Image (cartoon, rainbow, N blue to C red; front, top):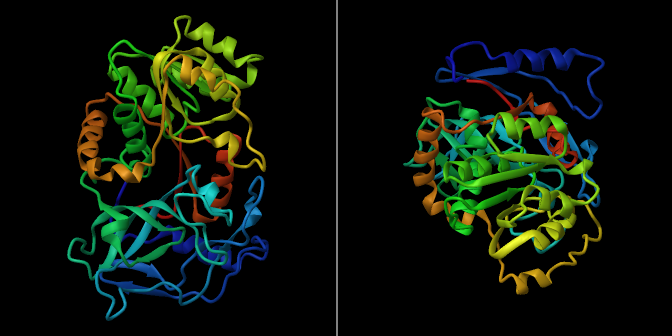
Length: 387
């Protein structure tokens, strides 16, 4: 997957072709291009970026983002006098539901809003081109917070980046299974839910980046696991590939509470919450006494001006439920422990992992927007360049 850094970069050739194409998208601003060499890494003098055009209300659109290609924008090394920084060539970018909140200009989120006119930022995998930081050197592979662009100058890598300790595994896995999404699944299930063997576990949005792993972690614990998804194909994936005991298409169910009772006649011990709204309401009625809910996300609510009400909160009292929200970055002190365990699971064939791959930075806006209609199957990844 990494390849030889001295091989011709097909991404540069494609950019040259697009620059000459009179039918290229109007939103793509292409100027004069040049190539330069840095060590054995061929770099483009341009730096393609996905920038936010405007803050968003309601459902986001691809047109809320823009591909910008400007000549002379790609640095070749960390600027003189910039201590403790790294220059990264981005390889893979992660599309994640939490990014929707950053597209709006409002307070109350745990992460800052995107800046209009500036590159979108998110989790990604890259290769260090140059470094003035003692922990990182040229040639290192890293994952963490980076820009939606070909090259990013990261001024505080000790807070933003993790070095990759298993480059023998697919590097794209560090956008998901071996990165933020996988660690989110692990923390939410093991740390928040404190599972016991034989317990009954329900996972919503179960075919996504986090859900597919929660279900498999639960099976490794000896739990009974059911997932919900938004298509029959995804339901088959849960049953046949990820090993869920049962699954259902929530879009085909007239009554979600009835569907849950059918799957859990004795009730639910653990609910891994990814969607909110009507699903959460139905789950509360079907929880067992002293059940636990790990609130990871509520994607059904992110684009609504007025969130859906939850009517069954009395169940929290009568069933003595524990509902706990969590932010994965609060737990990164335990990431290395997780990385080793997850890498071992992959190498031993104990975990199955599915990615939905979009090729090219120009396709990143469509990939991100697709999350909110359930277009993706598995972890949504954008390939910027392949190593």
